[in-house]
Length: 290
Ligand code: SF4
Ligand code: SF4
Image: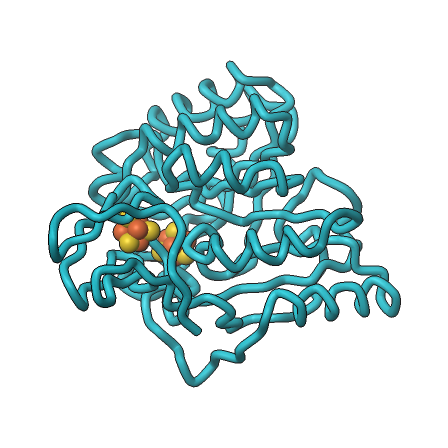
């Protein structure tokens, strides 16, 4: 489904500028952005994945947030396609980096609302988790769902948080909690690996905390990319400066997509956990593939 995107401006007679994320893509007629999901069509920026649901299932809250609510609480997980980062180790690359149009089912915000209200009655679902691909490149659809839901349903984002401040401030009032994938603690690494802007992600993380949101960080431990113990210590020290209560998941990375290195061993994971535990009270290792 297509819809005019939010957060863009005309740049010149045949170019538009997307203002959703720090890539700020300049798109000529018929060009799509790095995320694949936004395109200049006849001088207007359109969202190509509006209403495109690729994953819709009832999961447990503990699959995304380890230190929030009850692990067993049922949640409605929703995902679409598209992502504005390009991680070689992306476990969901078939929906994040490709357009899996054969998997798409079209939904309106009203249909999602009706489904979640039905699931609340029948299964006790009180939460929607936007996850699997990057939810922030689905921002128009998520905002529309949140606006008609009103209240009574928690909204959780499982996100890379690679977004500009204005769109973040627009969506943040709807959000109860976030799981933020922090892929490294260096501008160089962010530019090299996921090809994103580290400073923007850090600034956004602080902003979410300042707005009183529950924030949990996931650090995917990827051999050959972010397995430098000193850099990791800087990351956990940064989180500790915000609060020693800051929850952290260290996830075991797996060879997948364009990442061919082996997984970190149990000893390496425990070593990183020990570093984190010097600073933070709530640290968990996660072994399952996402
Ligand atoms: S969301 Fe980011 S990657 Fe996608 S078109 Fe906009 S600026 Fe580019
Ligand atoms: S940010 Fe997440 S969804 Fe996007 S490419 Fe990286 S791992 Fe995949």
